[in-house]
Amino acid sequence: MPENNQTPMVTVGAVVAAFLEQCGVQAAFGVISIHNMPILDAFSQRGKVRFVPARGEAGAGNMADAYARSTNSLGVCITSTGPAAGNIAGSLVEAYTAGAPLLHITGQIEVPFLDRKMAYIHEAPEQLKMLEAISKAAFRVYSAENALGVLKKAVQAAMTAPTGPVSIEIPIDVQQTLIPMPADLRPLPIVVAQPSAAALDQMAETLATKKRPLLWLGGGARHATAAVKRLQKLGFGIVTSVQGRGIVPEDDAGSLGAYNIQKPVEAFYQSCDAMLVVGSRLRSNETLKYELKLPQPLLRVDVDAAADGRCYANDLFVWGDAKAVLEGLADRLEAKQWQAEAALLQDLKKVHEQVVAQLRDGLGPYAELVRELQDVAGTNFNWVRDVTVSNSTWGNRELRVFSPHQGVHATGGGIGQGMPMAIGAAVGAAVTNSGRKTLCLAGDGGFILNLGELATMVQEQCDMVIVLMNDQGYGVIKNIQVAQYGARHCYVDLHTPDYAQLCASLQLPHARLQKLEDLPALLSQAHAQKGPFMLEVDMLSIGSFKTQFAGPPVNKLDQIPALQPATA
Image (cartoon, rainbow, N blue to C red; front, side, top):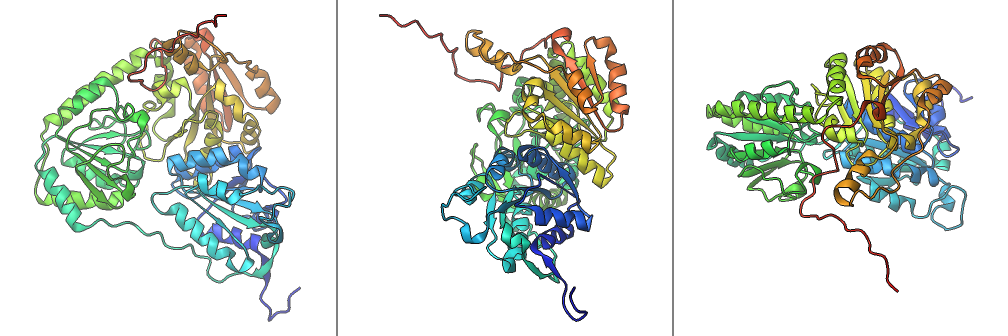
């Protein structure tokens, strides 16, 4: 025991835990290992951060990602080194694609053996280079003395727009080193990029000459709701990317929501005389591979200066934080007493009604599922989706969401990430007391990938409903094979578990929907259940969609011909 005049000594692992508490972290995710035990031991002893023990690093990374997105805060994932750090790679790619502020802390072997190619147990050659390739930034701690400084820099990088995942390696001998608890555990300030007044003046002058402008909102504008409302009052029409959903509530008559590529919408765009794109990358799957005809002139706002002219040529570009730019534009346009023509919003509403009707008609029997889900969910819920036919068909546009952090989806297109993401969102709802039930939409093909995380979900008693769309195969791939490969089906029929038996073994409440008339009662049962519930939708019994989804729209691609048999 130290004498009264001596400073108490703590491990670097304890410093990590104390610093994360100062960052406002309330939950973290990961897998315990000999290479991260000093950190997790400190979590347990301090008792302030809820640690969720995932069954694999891939799932843990998805959990931390969705926690960050749904709570608008820093997500934290803790892994071991070597294979474990490799296991999280796909999750970091997803977080990077989505711009999620995620801190990935990985252990590392002892400093004296690092990078010496000695085949040391759990070492991955060039691990830091791998992490650099799949993260916004990656750092390594070499000594106990600079551990806190590197950690502060890593968090600052993750939280500075454009946000993204940042990895930090902390060797196990450094984690175990005893040091005095630092006096200053405050995180570094996050700098907000301020636009130039001249650039704002120029863009406001351009917009002031227009009568039918649209505002395209991406994920980079999720914190700018108040500024968007000011521009709405001036008559701007709204359309969003999938990442921008909920910045404007999707029951707002002045918004198209994420109905951004449908043919009637593209035609409507041509009746508009300007589009201001804010915080969006105009991604390929939301612009018909960059062939979507957008209104002209095209104006862009982004905190990433390299977005200027990327994907689409733009007529004006303003660098800066989305909220700051939109506030500046609203100030200038209000001072000019500028107003868009009223017919713009009338036309927008008609187009929105048309494309919603088209979508619902194409759902066939599943239109009833969408209606019932919306009714039971209300307005305060998390809407987490995996890559599946149902999400591509309707989940990315309906259910409607009402705030900018309700929706989480696998932006990068990787299957199987939805269920662990939903766990992260449910944990986030619990620790922040948001009152949100988490709804998870998944397909049976991808669901099997992270099946072990069902045990995590039950152990943590996550308040969530999994809506599992089960067609016993890769449905979207089958549709693509019909559309482009002469209906030659291969490798798409899957052996599927009996989910009733599987859920019973896990003590997970389960119901199977086989008749639409049972839907209201089963949905009410699922939603009323406190904790996790799986509602399995037997698509083979209920039937097919009226309109088949065969992947993102394809331009200028003929069918792939069958191979001809070789001749002697």
